Length: 275
Picture (cartoon, one colour):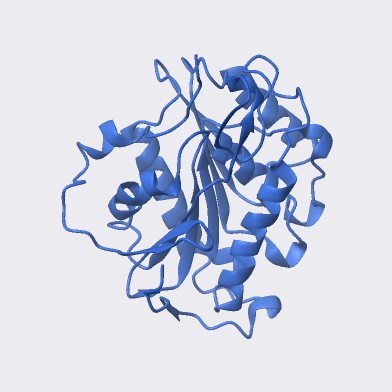
């Protein structure tokens, strides 16, 4: 039996106006192995990171739906490289890092995790170089993607502190490779998890919260849903949109010395025609 974490929003989207005309221009960047879904102008960025066996393409519809409440947000949807996954008998599939077992979240070395975190940091740096302050960027992800969001977001430099992190059905992976950057410990986190999740157990989410709180990470909210399995429901997506909207609005007029040279708004890049 193979364990995959993909295409988990379709049942929500079918009831959330997913058939409306697209609000975003979709650009497939094959060289960078990511998809950009952007309005004509944007002043904030949300990076959405998929789970095991999935690709960024699965999140285009979700980004479009979310853009109704976040009209000036650019969505970046990276895809993981293919690599052997021990959990699935060594089968190669899209994965941000190797997973050994569903029973022990701390088992194994999470091969590929450091490289994946570096890639996400590079995406953040590229957007900052285009004029977007770090505090107007949000990392979000489902399952393995949520794990990567937490792992990456809390190890950024002080001047790279994000506007927020959204972890859906995820956890903190490989604690032995994680070192909290104290300067970003106040980064707001919304953690969503189903109490009936048999893939990523609720105790993993609780242990993640406990471990981070012991490191003095206190701006961390774990929201649980009764009867919800390894998925995300309409209420969770509504909370996600509200969290991102609040974080970006709260920071809309804040300018730090570190970002004083950044432009308040950026044009989306010209679509590439050679991909």
